[in-house]
Amino acid sequence: MSIASIIRERRSIHEFNDKPVDRSLVLRLLDDAVWAPNHGLREPWRFIYAEGEGKSKLVNGLMTILDKTKLKDATDEQKQKFLNHLNNVPAYLIVVMPEDPRPAIWEEDLEAVSCLIQNFQLLGWEEGLGMLWHTGDYIYNKKFRELAGVNPGEKIVGVLRLGYFDEAPKARPRTAAEELFTVLN
Image (cartoon, rainbow, N blue to C red):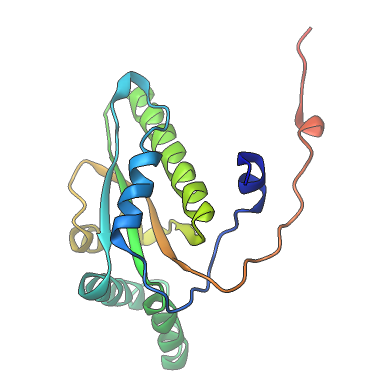
């Protein structure tokens, strides 16, 4: 597969099958993904992986937090459906970065980590591994951060839901670059 076709074919996956994700595959993909451009080779990233019992603790903790916020008005049936959805994700990878107090460095680091995550998604897709790069209000919640092992002074850039899938969603159209292209003369 060419890089261009992987870029065009990769999709965010919301529903995963039961096939487990091999931790060694995740590490191998990350070893390639870390070749993302990053200013001064700061390598401003760290990874927190949750599978098995660790995943259950993370999901149950998240549900406790969401029960008081996002899901506070949900029915028991809706909450159970959401819990089942989170439990059906085979593994979670939390990608964090240090929060440098200098705005330019902070921004460069965020951009580098975003490149790393995109590399990881494309490498995973090539292996048949789907994922969803998720962010939400909960990534700022102190209890969630403590539960996940995120240190003070670190930013969660994404909680990646990882797993294999049976069917990829169809691509939605993109705006042609030519329509967004300006030439300065």
